[in-house]
Length: 66
Ligand SMILES: [Zn+2]
Image 1 (cartoon, helix red, strand yellow):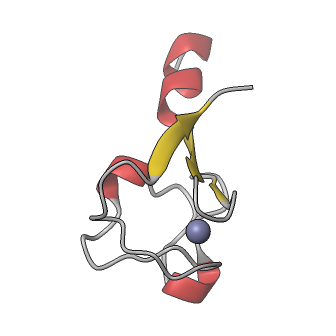
Image 2 (cartoon, rainbow, N blue to C red):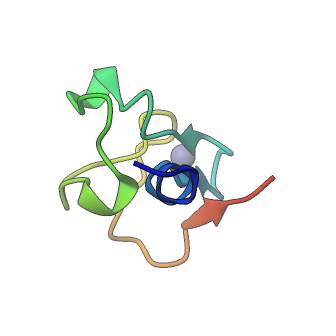
């Protein structure tokens, strides 16, 4: 896997409600999400582990860029 592909697959997403950052390299142990799970592959039932907001709520999660 090339460097570009790595960059793409590890996109992080930030919760604009509480500033929690979902990092696919960490997954979400609280939500039973294994490491390596992409944000776009999270189950529809997933909720932010910090503020419990639904992933289905539009505009809450944004791709996080430094
Ligand atoms: Zn949140």
